[in-house]
Length: 144
Image (cartoon, rainbow, N blue to C red; front, side, top):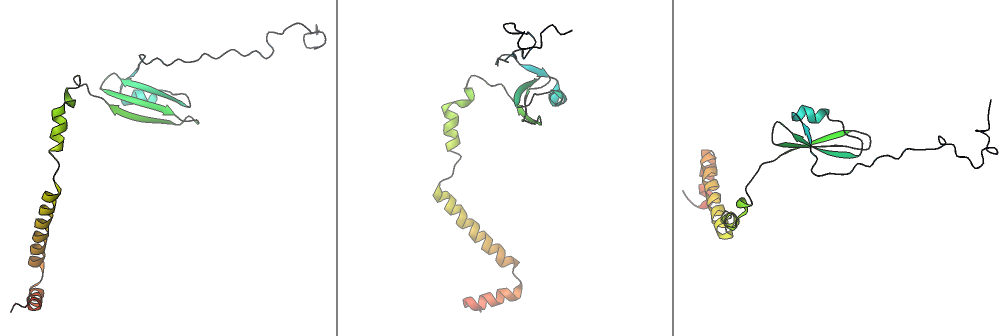
């Protein structure tokens, strides 16, 4: 028997609790301190990622971070990052910056090196040339 639950005229004022009810989806808050640990590359590859999501996976066996993301179709990509620990900025001192400037060469030094290289190339080409070409070249230059 139908007691009027499906009849809109008899159902006026009453609310059907199952009609069109959607449970709200929980939102996932990003917590930068929550790390997801995996065991090696195999663990990172097997970790499932939802479409349009990116997850940072920390390797428990080595100093590696895997950044795994999936596009809209769910196709995953994996980037591998190796990290190292260093002191509180001791590698970035002013002395290191100045020492890097000393590794560059000036334009004059470069041009001097370029001219030396050109003379060496000419001498090498003259040694490789066949003897009859040497005679022709010497006759053209005026040598007998």
